[in-house]
Length: 301
Image 1 (cartoon, rainbow, N blue to C red):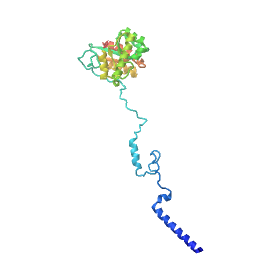
Image 2: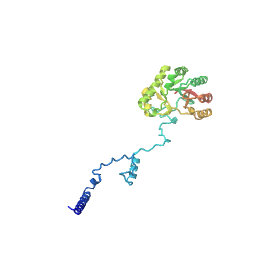
Image 3: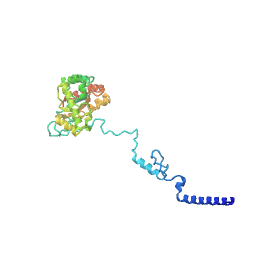
Image 4: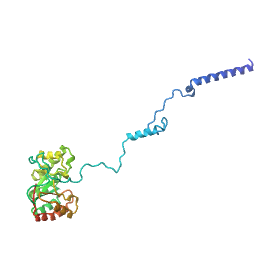
């Protein structure tokens, strides 16, 4: 075979191969490029990939962002605190609701006034006994021959039983003011019963007396509290004159409040425990002789 024939034959073979390759490429393009049956990449999490990343369009990003905002809880401002429904000051006293049930009956409302005759009033002293201020109050009461009612907290009685006995020995009345001065209006009946019964136990253990009356801390009464009073035979006792001595407004303020608001049947609220009660003692030194000079007589509810 001549050299010219060989060249011609090779050209024909090359041309035929190119023709076959072009036709196969049109029929199987992925296999030719080496990407046959590609494995889809895992969809990255939204937190790791921007909303406009691979596989996501810019038009879907705002919708996803809005959905995320709806599903996520709102951020709470560090300067906001949930509202506390509990009262921070004693409830205002109102008129006693007259009932016809027996003493301690479940129909009894708290006693806000006494009905013992003209110019007869009651002095009540709360939150003790205090080893500092209770003896000072007792000396004043003895000096002016005034009888008073002490609303005692069980924890304080347990801590200072000798002071509680001193009050009882002087002839004053002791009543229940809960075990730990808890606001009972928001407590369950079980907690209410425990607070009242433990205080009664402490008072009885220290003085051998069983209290016949109960005063709710903060003046916060509820049906469950009144029911517990009825079950234990204690009369609920409130007040009608509150000089807010516990807030230490100053001796003139305490004295002026009592003298302006006291009238026949008033129940005056004062404190010998729960803090510095020097203003209360100083006010009583002024108030007691003034009330006596105006013809008032003291009794216990």
